[in-house]
Length: 267
Image (cartoon, rainbow, N blue to C red):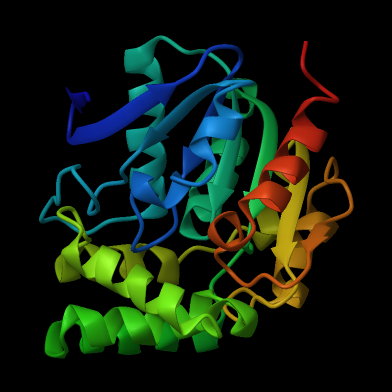
């Protein structure tokens, strides 16, 4: 699979399927393996473009500080390299921050926008939470760290299946490309200063906001500010019995929400 050398960074990416291009942008602490349960279904309908953000997976870990604008530049450079002019764009969590900024700065490149489990800013609580998680990552085993993190991103119902939850932890700690602590720290720094609230009206793409009803990381009241601020946003889709990692907890419902929105607009 390709590792492309762009102007300032090497990015790992994959393309699955054919059709109109749909790009997925990952959350903090994630790389493309996070999409494993939805790739097959979405790639039946779209040319699916997935990649590892800087500071994660198989992409580079630059030493300089990160910013959401820097992530935007990486993403657009990848699209230019692939010679893709316009895309449907889906961002999850931190990926939603990046997707918002792309839709604000490069509106002509976006066909339709999907913002999943994200908000227009990082709350004070979440900023402190991520900083705490960052310290824990430096001082604890990967197993303990991911168990702490999973309490925030998975629902009670999901975690009640202890055998599956433990298998998930074992998978990630044995995963060859698990995010390094320095990547997590720099991504936290980038998220901490992001705030799009006064600029949401600049997003002109028709937008879907997806919310996990049990998401305690990105609360519904914060995610709904996207719907309130984006003129072309449809009423949010709430997915029951799911927390922050909807696409892992209930991939069928997640894919259904995405396809129901996009198929209305396929040219």
